[in-house]
Amino acid sequence: MKTKNRIFLLLMVMVLSIGLLEGCGKKEENQTSYQKVKILNNKESLCLAPVHIAIINGYFDEEFAAINQEYEIVTSNIDTITEQITSGEINAGYGLTGTLMQPISNGLAISFVTGLHRGCTKFYSKNGSGINSLEDLKGKTIGVASLSDSAPIQLKRKLYSLGFKVNGKDADIQFVTYAMTDLPTALDNGAVDAIGIHDPVAYNAEKNYDFIKILDIGEDEVFSQEYCCQAYVSQELIANNPEGAAAYARAIQKAAAFVQACPEEAAKLQVENGYMPSESNEDIARYGEILASLNYEPSISLGRETFVASFKDLQNTGDLDKKLDLDEFTKKVYPTLDGVPESVVYDPVSKEFSEK
Image (cartoon, rainbow, N blue to C red):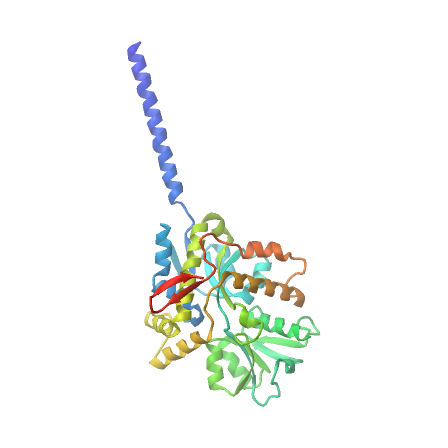
């Protein structure tokens, strides 16, 4: 009988030991299991300076190391966000607010996490054409890079506020598409009456052609208070790895703050690390001048206000379904992430960041 009891006790100990080991293994597995943050990057895109700087200066490294996670940089095309998010190729990125409004309303499951910069879109007419203001655009043709680009979206919002009919067969304006770099030539040759382009193409066009600037969103009373570009993550990432989503947001905020404080240095770093092409110091100076002309101070609240204002205006213009609920979309598309500050400021003297 004693022998049987000893055998029974030994068996019980073995069973309990195996259970404890399995339990510990599952616990450890759960602790290290997370959805990796896959960050979209694109070379030769000056406005993506915060992504480049976050890589170069190690802000991604710092933030993800702090939460014991890894991340991945995916170098790809910034114009195929919908496909990349849907396929899972990326789950964090950086894009034009206006360009993303319609895809979001149609079900693209991304959420903005912070505004990044303002003022990169400009509209021009040719000197001597008789188009000297936005009001002169009635009945005219505007060249843009894409009908879904933020340039026509921004222009529709502005012209609607001036009483224009901006959609439909009897619209007061018409849009035609050209490659972004071909738009200045199209305007100069008279193929279009005006163009909407982004920096650095806009900066170069203004220097090299006899154009009149009829709208600069960085100078406009309304648009200068809005973010043309914002950082986003997939809603799936927020659900499965909110810590990773927050780490991405913090890193990109730091990088934007660095660009705001040190635009010339940021441009130099972009060139030196192969993110922007350059053949001379003049190129670096030009990039720095463009970055300095944009406002790279990050903000969550102002980014959210940008989304709300865009949503309302585009419902009025007919570009978004009027049945969509603004409050519901704002909660989903601009949530508050734990651990992400409202804004960040960089001090180039102390080389330290402070939350604002």
